[in-house]
Length: 84
Image (cartoon, rainbow, N blue to C red; front, side, top):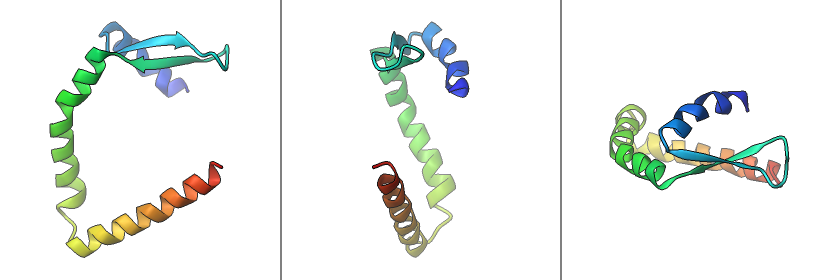
């Protein structure tokens, strides 16, 4: 939680998020994305997608991308089973 806390004040100041009390845990707080925050994410998305594609997918063959998908599906399944 500390790592999240260190970045939040900047986003609060910029109006990208709001902080609210957590109804389930008085020690915690909920961080919610504002409309301005959503707009910032949408503006960054095309560049982010291009970078991810260039760095993670372009170096792989089509077969390797399919294998990566299979591996990630297995990992996701394990995470979902563990969280139940």
